[in-house]
Length: 85
Image (cartoon, rainbow, N blue to C red; front, top):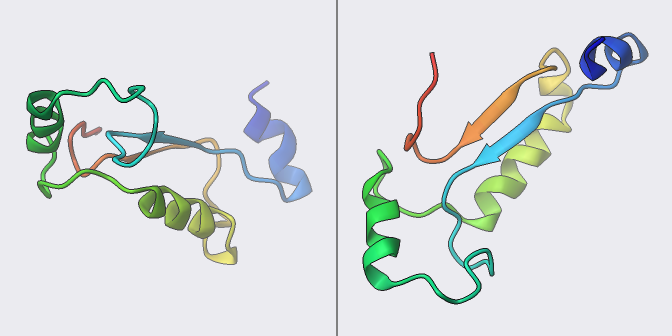
């Protein structure tokens, strides 16, 4: 049984945030070339890297009452670099 199906009756939502390139983190261990950085930005529809605040705001929304009917989902926060159907 999916975790969301098990916990949703108890009022707990279970979602995943799948982030794209987020600047200002140590994910690449300081080894990201300028060319690779630009290539990752160019993949986005909004032509900017993601920020830690973008992820924090998504988490804040998912934890809010406005998201109480969202569960069992993967939320893609990547500026449109990878879209889903």
